[in-house]
Image (tube, rainbow, N blue to C red; front, side, top):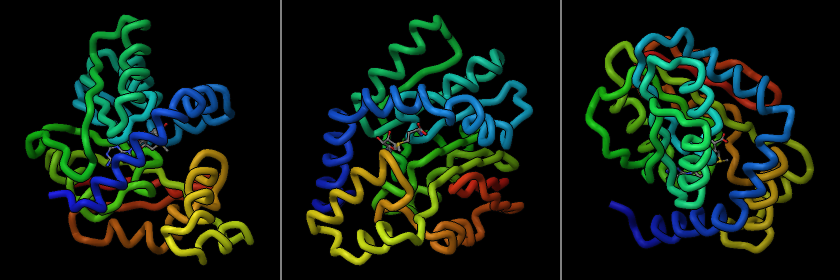
Length: 226
Ligand SMILES: C[S@@+](CC[C@H](N)C(=O)[O-])C[C@H]1O[C@@H](n2cnc3c(N)ncnc32)[C@H](O)[C@@H]1O
């Protein structure tokens, strides 16, 4: 059950992407990261064979669309808290006339799918902006079937002067809010980002076996088996 603070935080996330979602989508599509970086995470879940795949916090749907395009025999679902992103993702799927993918509103902390509904779950750049990260990881484990695979990619907070400055401000301060918004879009200095040990600790809870951590660029890629 969300507290009032959780509700405020989620309203802020929706509002942020209502404004910045189209620019974020353009940058994602334009950047070096489109082809090469997305492949890194997706390859961690390959090969695909009649899989049911969930992309959690799908944003404009880049990963989900890529998986659905690559594996026509898979059923792919992308969920996101932001209606603006779900609109963009649905539009892109329909432009490509894809029938093995759907996008819907959803919350990583309470996914609303049945236990074990998916054989693969992926999640890129979402845990940093989620209030209850332990609940988010537990939900992804819950909807995975036994033996199912999880792949997560998260930016690791840098240790540079900007990161240290923003991390030292109180969460409610204007400086911290600016660091969150700008850092989220453009850098690894957002105070929302976790350090490497904070990130790895999220997967220490015994929900998964075969957990691996791989550094890629300035991100950490985590794979795990349920
Ligand atoms: C940095 S974007 C990443 C989007 C996408 N995975 C990608 O890599 O392009 C973070 C996404 O997490 C979503 N998000 C934030 N909180 C969420 C929540 N509680 N449940 C589901 N999605 C959430 C945001 O709406 C946004 O689309």
